[in-house]
Image (cartoon, rainbow, N blue to C red; front, top):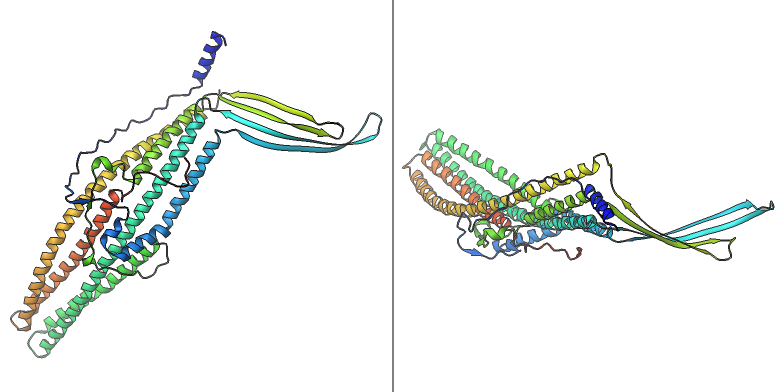
Length: 462
C-alpha cells in the first residue's frame, strides 16, 4: 500500500471514530482507618450468623426462607437470563455456518416444440464472519459478562436481605409474645385489684370512685391484649410469606429473654466494600456500563465482514453436478445515520454516569449502615441494662404500694400509679430488648453477612 493510500485510510478511520462522550468524574472513597464507634469485643462473622441467636426455630425459618422465598427465585432466574446473554454476546465473535437447500421442478418446451420436464436442486453451505477489528464485539461481551456478575451479586444481596428480614421478623414476633404475656399477667393483676376494690366499696371501706378507677384500668389493659394479638397474627403472616408459604401459625422456640445476643462481628472500614454483595453489584454494573460506552463509540468505526459459500447444482439435464462456490468480503462504514449513533453514544455515557453515582451512593450507604449498626448495638444494650434496673425498682414499688393499699394505709390511686409505671416499663424493656437483637441482625447485614466477596455461580460462563 502506498504512503498516500495509508494516510487516506488513517484519515477515514479517524473520521469514523465518533465523538468524545463526556462523562462525570466521581470522587473515589477513602475509608477511615477505624469505625467512629468503638466496636468493642468482636468475633468472626459466619455465613450462618443467624445460628448465633441460639434458637433452632429461628435457624429453621431462615433456612426455609432461603430455600423457598419468591424474591430469591426471581433473582436466580435473572442470573440465568444474564448468563444466556453472555453466551449470545460471545457467539457474535464466532463465525456462523448455515445450510440451505433449494430445488425446483419445471416443464418447458424445447426447440423442437416438445415438452420437457426438469428437476434441479442446489444444496449449499454458507459461512459468515465479522472481524472484530476495533474490539466492539469484545466490549459487548465484556458488558454482558459484567452484567451477569452484577446479577449474581444481586442474587446474593437478595439472599442476605431475606435472611435478615426473616430473622428480624422472628425476633419481632418473640417480642410481641413477651408483650402479650406481660399484658395478660397485668390484666390478671388488674382483675384482682378490681375484685378487692369492689369488696372494699361493698363493705364501706372505700368510695365508689376507687371501684370506677379499678374498672377503667382493667378495661384499658384489656384493650392491649387484642392489639398485641393482632400484631402477632400479622407478624406470623409476614414470616409465612417470607418462607414461601401460605399464612399459617409460626412455631416458637426460645423466649425473648433467653435469646443469645451474638457478639459484634469483626471487620475494618477498608474491608467493607469487598464484603457487601450490593456494593459488588454496583461495581459490576459500572464496569458493564463502561464497556457498553466503549462499544457504542466503536459503532462509528468501519466493520469488516467476510463470507463464503459452497455447494453443488444438480439437474436432470446435467450428467454430473456442478460445483458452485463464492468468496467475498465487505466493509461497512457509517456515513450518515441521522444522529442515531451519536445519540446512542450519549445515552451510553449517561448510563455510565448513572452507574458511577449509584456505586458511590451504595458505598456511602454501606459505611452509614455499619456506623448506625454499631451505635445502635451499644446504645440499645445500655438502654436494656437501664430498663432492667427500672423494672426491678418499679416492681418493688408496686409490691409496697399493694401491701399498703390492702392494709388500708394508702389510697388505691397510689397502687394504680405503681401498676401503670410497671406495665409501661415492662413493655418498654421488651421493645428495647427486641430492638437490641434486631440491631445485631442489621449490623450483620451491614457487614455483609459473611459474604465471601467473590461472585460465584457453578454454571456460569468462564
